[in-house]
Image (cartoon, rainbow, N blue to C red; front, side, top):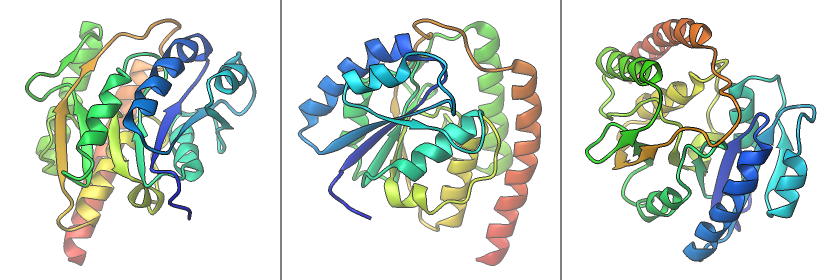
Length: 239
């Protein structure tokens, strides 16, 4: 494992070529301004569906077809496996996460083991449709209460991790709930693991359609909550 890359920015993607064409130049400008060695990793679908590879090449990003399947979880695990950075930021490829926030996450890298760009801490905001806001708030409240998590935003994927922490995980969730799985496994498997939240705005996607199936979204989180609650109890018994 080489430490030459200080920061990996990972972007799971699915037919996001037009959005990446807007996002990547801005992100490159932010990262250049940080004065660090970095890489941008875009984990796309296993087979080509749009112009994402050409957009990545034109903007200095590494294009990685996801392995294991088509789900969001496969894009996340593929990005983790491909990452080389001492720190890793995950962010959305659809324009909903502000690239400028990467600099703010980076500035807090020594303040905690995990830094979360939070919609629900003081100063945070979300522009999602009302039904998605309601579902997200419900997920966050339930997960905080049942699992005893201390952060306000458990479901936003926009986070800065220590790279080695991520690469050491064995992840099992099959879709968007992998975001919560990562959080729980890091917090409860590592005594003394620290979190910090900074306020963030979650914008509506620039173009294209969302890949979330709301019914599958709700069902998957019920199963995830049960599994992660069992995991928490197992870890606590082993201490």
